[in-house]
Image (tube, rainbow, N blue to C red):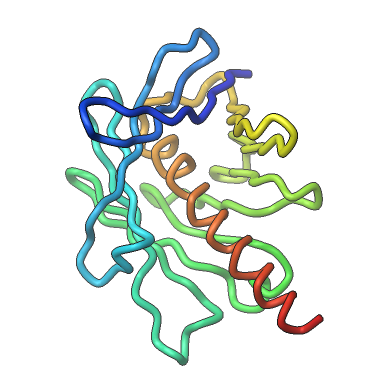
Length: 175
């Protein structure tokens, strides 16, 4: 099992979030991104230390699809769509998509952590430690930290956090 951590990084007036491995070496950086037809506020890019880049954005929502979010993933040679499963998003976070005709699922577990599955196999868990404010990625040892799957799981965590904020706001309105 490999372990990664999110770390705030400020480098020459540029803010980013570094993803560091268990040796405190950066494997990539997250910054604000831009994608056409996506919400400017909810679009992020991930660039690995090898230079591969990936951008993920929340597609602009219309009133009719407020409860089913779609996420656009764009890399150098790929454009993918991930979307929430209808009905499940009211109870917990669940996003599904395909990479090379293989199914990828990102979902919230009962502990409130984010679980990632690829082609039926569990490949990672993202845990947030509220006490220490650290966020850890516990990944399968076979997962390449320069792969498209790794970039998607890293960026999807920001969409997971957005979902948690929005669902908390809705719960407070109904309370």
